[in-house]
Length: 192
Ligand SMILES: CC(C)(COP(=O)(O)OP(=O)(O)OC[C@H]1O[C@@H](n2cnc3c(N)ncnc32)[C@H](O)[C@@H]1OP(=O)(O)O)[C@@H](O)C(=O)NCCC(=O)NCCS
Image (cartoon, rainbow, N blue to C red; front, side, top):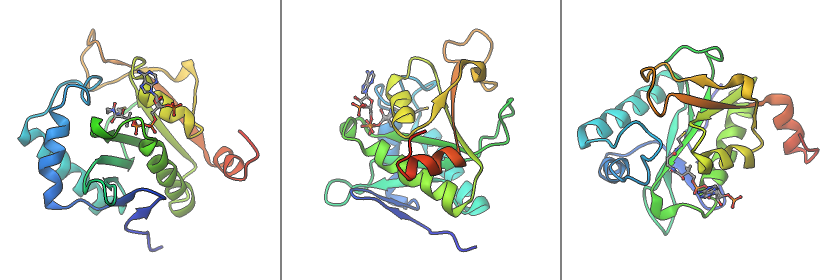
């Protein structure tokens, strides 16, 4: 199967990463608004290491967290895409949908628009049975995106993130799921 290398939406171009993305990615990862619900702001070196891991994931799996370009507005606004978490939990192995955008471009529907394209890629091109997403309970913006793209939360799936130590403020996570039949019904306009 030949996978599309990039995705186009009405306003976004989701593409593989370029060397020039690293500097704006580091600025975004140092912005307290962006990292509010992440364990810490990242140094330039840590940010570059994340970009490297994203590139390795693309090489290993043929898909990943695409760089988001907004034509005529900015060459790099962050990432949206699919990835395979490396930790072990009740719901792994799985494919996760995730996003991180420059705060200058929030609240314009970009994450939702890109995420819809990533979901379609996951279910139609990769033929996945299920896609999950997770965040901390307080990250209402991210949860709102999950809801807008048709994912559902069940409190029975809530989990403690194994990468964070017991007692860490961000350890508790909520899990959202969407399976292929439900995605197909939603895409056909038949509701959930
Ligand atoms: C999460 C994130 C990608 C959303 O990007 P975005 O392009 O602004 O998302 P959208 O515009 O598609 O949707 C945002 C929704 O959140 C809502 N929202 C914004 N601030 C909110 C708040 N404080 N409380 C509740 N909802 C909020 C918006 O109103 C919008 O919903 P609506 O369309 O129903 O009005 C962006 O905020 C981000 O990069 N955050 C930091 C990184 C992060 O937390 N990533 C997820 C880690 S799991």
